[in-house]
Every structure is written in C-alpha cells, then in structure tokens.
Length: 136
Image 1 (cartoon, rainbow, N blue to C red):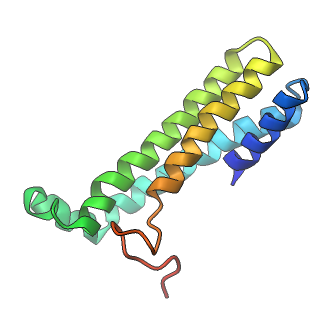
Image 2: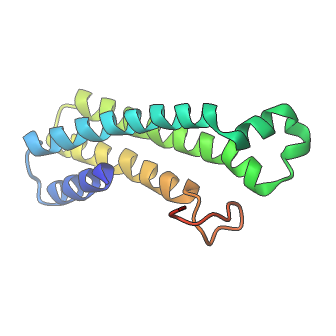
C-alpha cells in the first residue's frame, strides 16, 4: 500500500513540478522499510512452509507441480525482486540532486516493483496458484 501511495504522490508532484518535501521523503523511507520487513517475514514463513519442505526433498520431481513450483521458486524470486526494486529506487532517489529526478526515480522504480508484486500474488484466478485469498 505504501509504495502505491508513494507512486501516486511522487507522480503528482513530478507533474506539478513540486519540491521533494517531507511527505515524499517519509513515503520513500517508510515504503522501503516496510517492504524489507515484509520480505523478512516472508523469508521466515518460507522456511516454515510444508510446501517448501516437500519441494526441497525432491526438487526435480516437484518442479512440474505448478502450485509447488509457483510458491517455491516464482513467488519467492518475484517478491524478492520487487523489494530489491523498492530498495534501489529509494537509494537512487536519496542520492539524486533535483526534486524532479527524485520524484521520477521513485515513480519508476516503485512502479516496476508494484507491477512485480501484482504479477506474483497468488490470486485465486491464477492457473499457477489455486488458493483462496482468505483461508479459514
């Protein structure tokens, strides 16, 4: 949610030629921090997952199973790449000189990260991961 707010705010500020203010900086920093925290939680859940244990026992046999390969490889790599994009975008924006360059860097890097996140979410309609959004 925070990267989407950062994209919207920085896109608007870029188009309006606004200064890189405290709001943009807080959105940049908070988005990066929360993305890293969520990745850490994801790594912990990944290590405890029974689906991943099944995959690691015999990866060659399990790679043909779409649900297992999605969670063990694709989801893992896609979400990690998205957090890397957010981190790189945050770092680049911090180092750039002008407000327009900072807004554009956040808009571009965070936008690519959000696209990756949307692609690698296990949606219920996805042919790769047939799982409900909320499990009871």
